[in-house]
Image (cartoon, rainbow, N blue to C red):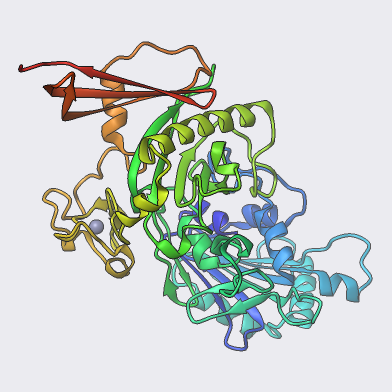
Length: 474
Ligand SMILES: [Zn+2]
């Protein structure tokens, strides 16, 4: 449902409980819908969304709202009209309906009913009889809440669990699914990651590069570009025959509390998160390998399932996962060469982020930001109303400035790879990553100073290291 708001070019989405906590309100300031678009949204089985948009399947609203509650009233206002519609299981049950009826009504800006007046009257009568909006005045009042254009969706008769209490729990700045294992007395392996039960945690990473501000219970969600919250990041290419090259970035997250719960690859599709915390390669083993590592990739050629909670498990998907596994295994060996994970964690401090980025509250652009003298930054504290003008990085300190090239991946390394014009590998060979740095190395008692080129090639679980000295001053 959030996707629908994003598709409608909303800059702000509000998700909150009504004061009686009996309804969930999802509102946005997007373009709203005209009568045709509104009919499509509320008609079951209709599927005609612009392919480029996130809410591709057009059923996000229907399946989404009916999952949360039995009844929904939708108010939408676009440049040319106002519409109200009612998708209600309670109503259908009450009248013993044999087919799905969705009462809808549209007015032009002067308040004249658009289309068949008798049909509209009938619809209005049903809405005022069966919904919480009991009169036309109530409906008009709802339209007045929409400032220019936008959509307000009320969902009520919220789903309950076996104890007949609501499945949703409302908190000061979050909405959670009850009956998830978030009990701190459980061991980390038994606990669900917050993304599974916390709307706030989910919205924070729902979009690869967030461009729409989301508020939950009137608190702004601190959304993030996940790779820009990590330590020791490294980007590798995913190359499959006949598919556009894409990238995965691995890094460690620096919050020790979440290390054991939150790790794995976040797989995005057209900017939208499809599968979080996918375990790949040696991460899948029941040991500490991979703990604390987050991967992030966007794979445009995979196909999400209907509800966008996963990808189609086809051959291409398995091949992508194999690539992700090879890149992860190589990354892990590079970071933890001798298996000394304990020693490694001792060097990591919370907030020790490679390339922290913040989003401007005014222009929504993402900016690299400077870390403190100790190399630490608390993005969360810095972020709520942060603006470009607060930035200390020259050239990135005003809303007019263009954003840096690659917001997601550590572009430095990608650019270098491309500029080197490395020969194209045959598809599906294990990925070779290279990393260059200035270095000193002792070999045969002789100190060699020069540029060292580390390469690692992962194959069958073995790592081959190449160490080349380009210049030798001795
Ligand atoms: Zn700005």
